[in-house]
Image 1 (cartoon, rainbow, N blue to C red):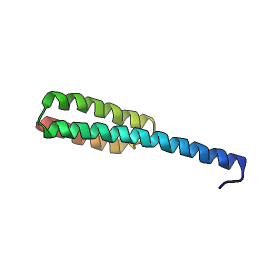
Image 2: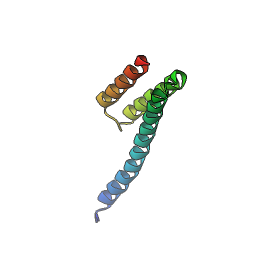
Image 3: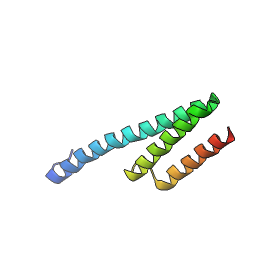
Image 4: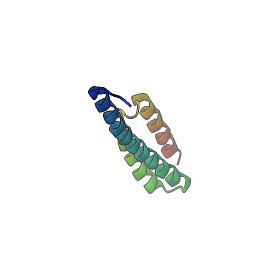
Length: 86
């Protein structure tokens, strides 16, 4: 455990940010799974809606620095290909 006051503060901030990042990543993964299940069920309407939501979540993750921009772009491209293949 840190003894210096600033190090204690940094440890606390790191823990808070870890929890926030974990929450954001979990919501992104959930939205991606929802899209995948809609595609698997061949429900075009639900797939389109969940695609838009997943893209929104990915963009939000990029803006908050949780997901790298290229990683999000790759995932969005993959989702778009799956949607267009329906």
